[in-house]
Image 1 (cartoon, chains in turn cyan, blue):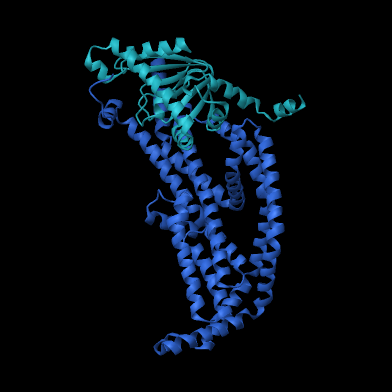
Image 2 (image 1 turned 120 degrees about the vertical axis):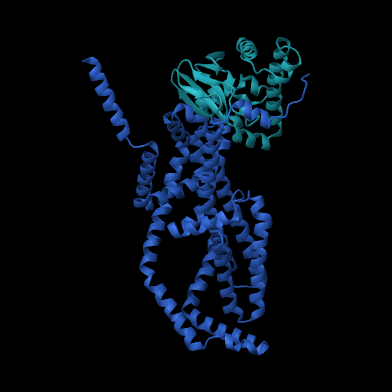
Length: 185
Length: 379
């Protein structure tokens, strides 16, 4: 009992709270606490006020964002106006494609209410998975499952082969996939 | 009337806009002001820089503790206590041997000039006996003695400066661990504080820049420490095997001097050659020590540097040497040490900012069409 109390005194309650949140993020499913702890020290925290822009469509994607608290709107600016694609709530994540390639952001992200975000920079993530094979396999596996989900959801709605080639690039497809994910979260 | 006022006020605002300096000038002034402040308080900046360096060495251990959810303040305190005890233990075992060597060297120092003179004469005779034509190359003993005396007198005039440097060193020895402790303990809070005050839309680039700086400085410092240790140990072992005096002292000097690019290995090698010359007064041991230091440099370039995460590997060799020269002119030895990471960081930041600028002028579709190879099916 005394030992347990000592351990509690040593433990960082703030980090523990973040770790518990990371345990519920689908992208990190399957990682144990030790592996999540290694990931945790790579994260940056930032608070956003209502209507503050997190990233802008077309800018280089460099990081993954995990929502600790609040609500974030993902939207895409088309030829005419801005189209909302999805709303991410606490425990959700976005900008995951930045971990894979060096392409520009497909959409913009904006805080709909005061929000707290954890930011994982791509090179930090690369460094982490380079030294930890198990983390790499599990996270990449989860990421591939997410991407496969996008593709499968997009196929029946597209018109034949052309839609299959382009993948979930239309706003309609993204909305469908995003609403599915939001309901799952 | 109202329209007139509006027109007037718009005219005024238009004039005010034309008077306001462009952002580039404001940025240039801000950078110049920061540079001036840094220059005026350069001693303090150097102290902070050294504290930051110590913090960088210890940070990976703190991160391991933090990943196990241990409070940062407790982890840092325990690690500092551990480092303090390790340093005391090292001093206890290593210092008696090192002190013996230093004492021996200091007792023979008053006669060093004469012994060096004798050694040079002996070496000259040896070379002339083997190659008589080389006699014309050597200067007479009197001229050489004059030059040597001039050099010693010049060093003696610098002595008060050396004493004040020693006082600064002792002060730094106390303040650097103190500052670095607080840097380490509060680094997460400092980063959080800065991030919260940066413009929201630039956070991604700012985090990228910070992470790159962190990665480059961390790699460089850890590489430098590993390199210094390996060079020091190998040099001390090699000199000990060749039977050269003060192997430990020369090994430590070679390891420490190695942090200065280009000049460091020459400094370490020259000290070892001088000791060998005075001790043996012969050409063969000199050649052996020369080959040892040459092999050490080769070992450093081919094995140690690539393993210790090749410092400056992202830089063009010309840029690397130029940065060391400019750093040396601006800030002396410290400038030479920090030149390589500074120029690597600047290069990386410029690359990130240019990339951001390039993306803003290019549409996403264009980039996708030029960079991604798609296949004609998804299944």
